Image 1 (spheres, rainbow, N blue to C red):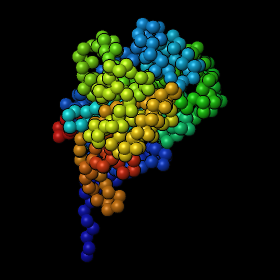
Image 2 (image 1 turned 60 degrees about the horizontal axis):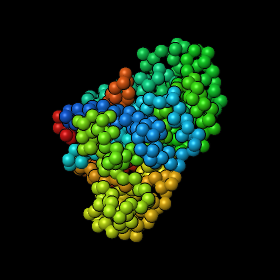
Image 3 (image 1 turned 45 degrees about the vertical axis):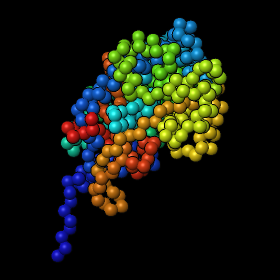
Image 4 (image 1 turned 90 degrees about the horizontal axis):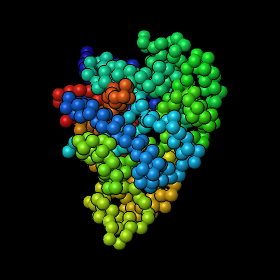
Length: 461
């Protein structure tokens, strides 16, 4: 008699994860490799992430203040000029309305790459995907015994703190993420703490049909409350949204609360370049405080705005020691530990679509990439950023081909989710994407392992 091979505990855990999948899925037409356990972070590393949330909250508040002061002429006017490039004047005017003066995004999500010397923040995302996915992963892996960062319900607690209920508006551009938002809304409405009286509307995921939003607006008015909207679309997508002008007007008059707010300047990646700009150092030191300013210098990579304006002959671009951007074409392969990316307000500004890794390009391709970047400056400023390679990590996963639990030796991107509650940035979950070691740009893909982060003594520090 042939006895079947015993089923391992890891196989049972993967099967339990499969069984827990929502019938409608979490990402449209997306899949990833399953792991029997979360990605391990040491208590010390998690403590650093907790502190980072406070610093990034300070940073975003300072960014918002710097723009306002620049508009008023109390800080260099070129700051606002950079940030407003390529944007419609009506959107710029809306973002400057007094009613939105102190508003910033209620969710902060940095993309963190652990390195051999700590970690670096590749960028900040003010309209992040993965909220519903991370909530589901935390819930699922917590049920299996993992001590997930944020706990089983942390992500749900965080999102519920934004508004008591309301509409999640998802554009066609962001339709991939609609299933996770559907699941999120369903979970929020089913919670025992949800107030289903007239003081709160049920969470509802909608497209961008004006009729639906108008009906919900009228219902909110009858109940004596504003229409609450979570904006899950980028500003560049506004021309494709028939409801946008109406929603923007409701936000302007205060009868609708929209988060993230209509502030395209806050969603530019060039803030990292402005952080390193010498004429602004006194501002950052004052607004962040000396200690937090120095701490952020260790994790924000040196970044430059590719402004083609000529420099005086005696001047150099700090950190690169060149007088003209075209001198970059003469950099050696070692000197080209650099990445080119678009700053914002473009369909290329999310995912990895507007990115060129210098070391992966031939000399001719690198020269052409620089020329394209300089030509885009009037409407879509491009950035140059130091590229920091991720450290090697190991993560078990189920190999779909063999059915065996094997180990991936790869690099990880960590996405901590901070929700602003009572003026504090609370860490409620961390999404870990482990990619094969030969992948330099770390993002979701079918050959990546996607898991929640868990606290473990043997985790990375």
